[in-house]
Image 1 (cartoon, rainbow, N blue to C red):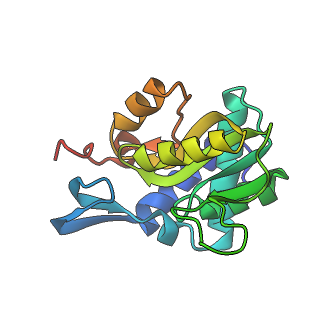
Image 2 (tube, rainbow, N blue to C red):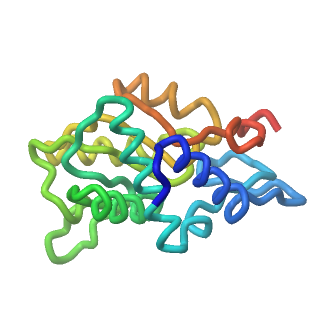
Length: 189
């Protein structure tokens, strides 16, 4: 195990750059609707168990460094799933995921996993450009009685997430930014 939070963060950044960052010949449309030639595939980068464990520990380090205590971790499926599970295992927390739509059968819920009523929540996602999807997840967490104490992501591809989370009254601290990855912010390419 890598000993210090700084060394873990540096190792994770190297993994992201070598295993997940692509420069494409033509811009592609991102889920935010923006276009970019640079694509960070966080799921591919962290497909190896040890790499996901490292990223999960880095999220725990980040919360601790910011004085944030939480009971449950999760966010909107599919971007949050690996971190919900990884952080829960590494940090002995509860996990949950927020569905985009209820299943329409069974419990027919948006939030699956931990019951959030009265819980402090770390809201996570993999790679974000605006934070809009995570803010939808926050609304559903609020409706379940949870309180988002911090939002984070593997990488923020622009400055808009900080602005959008700030407007919603949520502390946002990404593990990495576009600048850390050595790529232009989305919308400035």
